[in-house]
Amino acid sequence: MTAAEPPPDPVVDARLSRHADRPLHDGRVAVWRHPAAVRITHWLNVVAVVVLLMSGLNILAAHPHLYWGIRSTFADPWLSTPTVPDWLLIPQGRNLAEARNWHFLFAWIFVANGLVYLVWAVVSGRFRRRLWPTGAELRGFWPSVKEHARFHFPADDHARAYNVIQKLTYLAMVLVILPLMLITGLSMSPAFNAVGGLLLELLGGRQSARTLHFISAGLIVGFIVVHVGLVIWTGFLNNMRAMITGWFVIQPPGSTAGPRLRRKPPTDAGDAP
Image 1 (cartoon, one colour):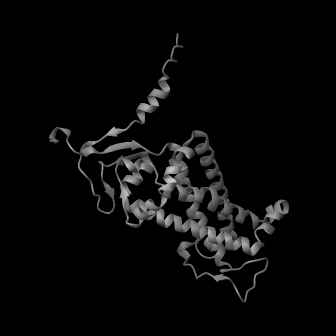
Image 2 (image 1 turned 90 degrees about the vertical axis):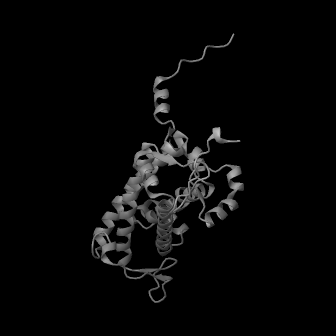
Image 3 (image 1 turned 180 degrees about the vertical axis):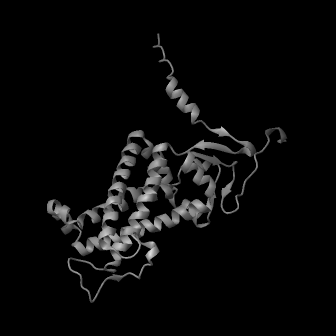
């Protein structure tokens, strides 16, 4: 005698039904891609990163030279950055004290927002399902590189999941670049050094931490440029709709994304010989 199956959960059934695929005309399908937690934390990150970069440029403008080690060898900097126009700075015009206030405030907003997303992604299983690559995906890394080099981006059912390059890039940002940005930023804080001075020594000194902080910011800018470029290339309206409403439109099988969507019309089984 088998145990009776538990009765269906109406709340779970309603949620699954609400997020089920929605067939559209011309063989397209609207799929549920981004839950509210992803969309809210994404747009908070956009605001925080913009303010951090613009206020960070204002801080850098106070001494636009980078060094390695403990001391600033003024006569021989490792890198000197060019003058930045005022419209790229927060606040407008050079103001080191106020720029630091903006930078520190939004740094903590960025950290808190990132921790909320990370905890939610791990607890909900999204981190494992959406971002962690499988062995098969890792073995297909080089074929995926070749596809990207040809600007070949599937817009059909393959677009439901992130490809291996997207997964590895997001993991590198979440697990390496952003923590490095946080660690180097904290290590330059005198208040933090009072309780965690060893961190500054491990980074090679205050000037090394400042340079690594700048490099991390540069990598984040590079990520943003590529990310926004691909959002535009693979369908700006579709990607923006997904990040605003949660729904992403899948094209018919064989379709590829680009400035001119190559859509393969659905085949009619009744016409087959």
